[in-house]
Figure 1 (cartoon, rainbow, N blue to C red):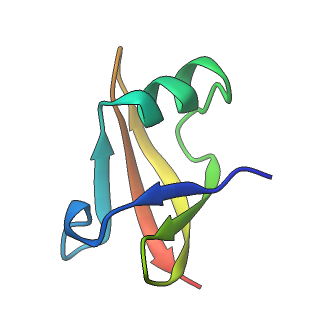
Figure 2 (figure 1 turned 45 degrees about the vertical axis):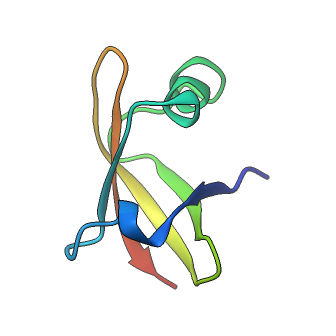
Length: 68
């Protein structure tokens, strides 16, 4: 099972997070995520969220997170 960690300040008030770092590379290269795919997200020192891939570009992944 994979758990994607994000910092609280990376989440927008709407629950969106766009990743362009090693986490995005892992999501794209290893997990091969596609739009609408679910990803378990953990907020550091916070809650678990279910993330839904909103968009994928050449090097970035945007997820919409919903608290579980």
